[in-house]
Length: 240
Image 1 (cartoon, helix red, strand yellow):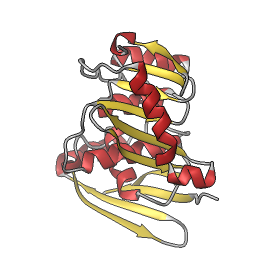
Image 2 (cartoon, one colour):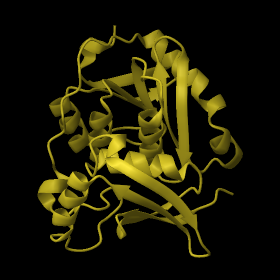
Image 3 (spheres, helix red, strand yellow):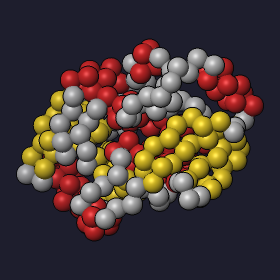
Image 4 (cartoon, one colour):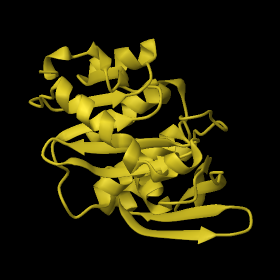
């Protein structure tokens, strides 16, 4: 059975969000969430990070640079209350529907590449193979296959862990595509656009709002992806 633990993300002494998560790669989750939710713009904006475990759960305590701390303090004054799945820490409808930044151009991926990646993905999902109850988010490099994968009981958490791990790496991220084992909701597209993924491939289908967000961000959205085929919903020009 996969573990599921309350994890609190704390910025400068105040809790920003609490989610149920797999108690692994918590630093990656803290960094990735801070980046994809716009709390920080780069890893260096987080000047300190400490993971503290207790009987109640886990706290990821972060201390921000002064400009980011002041921005977050101002934002918190308008925080109305708790939020739902995938939208932790936002403070308005406008924030939930924020514009997605456009990603770069130039990447091309072939159906053979997508099929090969889907074929290789299950063997990288160690926790998924053991439990059949967690999601995975992985970065597939054009030059060498999967370079990073993170798993979690929550699909948003898995993606944030991946974003955090890639951002904290000393090596530049190679050109490639984002692979998800979950459905594609608008928040997943928003997070993918922040990390600059030109191609997003998922085994399940997207929502209509996710498709519109992907079009806005110029992301190639590939869904219902199996080893024997897939559907391209946006920007098919990147699929050679």
